[in-house]
Image 1 (cartoon, rainbow, N blue to C red):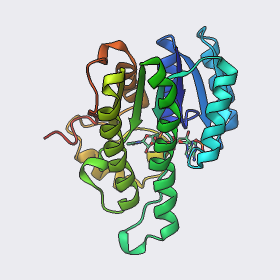
Image 2: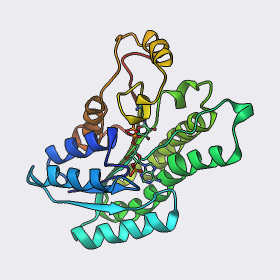
Image 3: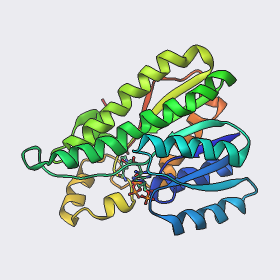
Image 4: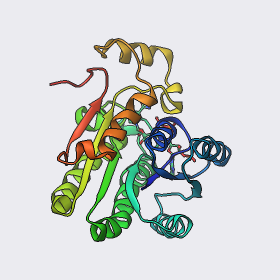
Length: 244
Ligand code: NAP
């Protein structure tokens, strides 16, 4: 079976790709800028004995996402059974300082891309009466965050998109679930100032930052038949940060 992971070359996407390859999936590796990282990931994955190809596409542009899906189908000769909407960016600043372009860039990349890719994937999944759509949200999509109104809105939007897809397609054997990571050690969080990191750490009951592999293992579960009766759910992978 084939899994397509958006923004796969680095961070959480890279860990997801390696995990799904270890689970036996062929993997379509999407990247926008990180070509070298995508190529070396392809080599690493191929060594595991599954098929892997890389696809450059800015998934926030509908035409590029559509071309990527067509190229994936041509390259693998099979349909995407598992879609992981992982590509994401931040453009943080307080509400009053946020420019419309920062709002739009984040909504386009984090939310609109997930809509384009889910719509592109679901036609074949629907025909096959099987599919898994897994979207990477965030704890801030659940609880908000000062300085991240654009990012939080995009991640809350992912949850609404996921639940609606789940309701529309549950009867066709397609599940849609979201994962809400907390504070995970990647390039996205590397850039935070030490004092910001310290204050976030204090809010994590587990007392430590998470790693990309811990998110990838949750994706593995949602991609597998072990989760066949679970749809429309949001699983926080956050060391207890947002428990209610
Ligand atoms: P990262 O290391 O910065 O990776 C982001 C990935 O997204 C990169 O591979 C990047 O690819 C890709 N990307 C960005 N814009 C893209 C576009 N237009 N088209 C295709 N790919 C694009 O960050 P990360 O922490 O792994 O984040 C992965 C996901 O987890 C994101 O959705 C993020 O919001 C979410 N998340 C992260 C954390 C955390 O603490 N790290 C917490 C909650 C949620 P290129 O380099 O090729 O552009």
